[in-house]
Amino acid sequence: MPAPPLSIPRPPKIQDSQEVKKSNKNNNKIDDNDKNVVTESENLPPWAKITLTSAEAEVEKLIVRNELKDAEVMYFCQVEPILQDGPQCGLVALAMASQEYTKPVSVSQLLAEARVRGFTQHGEVYSVDFMGTLAAEYLPDHRPEILVDLQTCPDALTHALAHGAMILIPYDSDFNHSPCLKKGHKAHWALLVGLIASRQGYYVLARHGKSRHLACWPLRDLIESNGNLEEEGTARHAGGYVIPKGGVGGQRGLRSRALSLHPYI
Image (tube, rainbow, N blue to C red; front, side, top):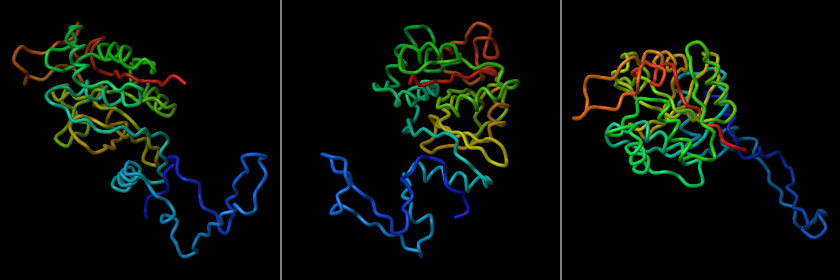
């Protein structure tokens, strides 16, 4: 297989003609009668020794598809996809992140709370601050941190991901949901759940509410898209959207900002 092995935790490598010994529960001594000998065939390719989960297999396919050289998965957190119904991409991304919490939160719960707080009318969330408030309320085992000036400090994203944080990030979504530059008219939210280092640079693994499939994008493209969010689109629901003071590109909006969710350990 052309892709190198992932650094995602996997079953330990089986060794040739090695005996797997069981400990005696009473005295911690080795019981010769309980030795299980596992032999590996010399004819099997290395890949045949490993059983990948469906999520890990999907990551492998993305590495191959993007032709990433010397790829190493530095972080990956598996969450199940949730599809959005209407302009609820931010709330859907937060609901997916809550799967890491002992009490996952539904999109309907988040929508009701966001409406009560005056953050949204139809499910839209045009403020990273609004998202941080919801995360602090519904993910108490995670510490939300607003990341700013991402164009100047892109390392903030890679550092957070490499240390086990998921990241909620707004960007402009193209026809295939990949990052593009539409000045915020195609604003969308994604949940970053993985980081890949390769010869071509950093790539991120993402979930979002418009696809059941895991996405893989160049980090530089995502940061550039995030930095171009200036205004809301002209196509809107009746009654309009809730826009924070200062606008989409303002200090409480979306531009050059993201929300990291650090798990308490």
